Length: 100
Image (cartoon, rainbow, N blue to C red; front, top):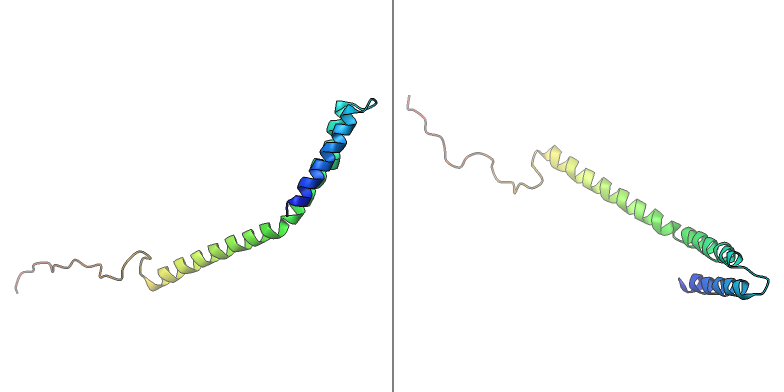
């Protein structure tokens, strides 16, 4: 997937090098050539290619949040804390009472 952007950056770097070493060229022209022919187009293409992955990550995060909220609501509706082992909450030893 990254082979084409790397190759394009190599071509843009060679164009910038040719611009810098040319008798009529300048280093500023080489930098501008590399930025406008190399970095900006490759950055834009990689950003656009990453859009489906970002959308999938957002949907997965929202689904996980919905599942966690649903589990919390279900545990709250059943009256049992999520970490309880369904053991009785009363003291196992009965309190001592006076005989009537």
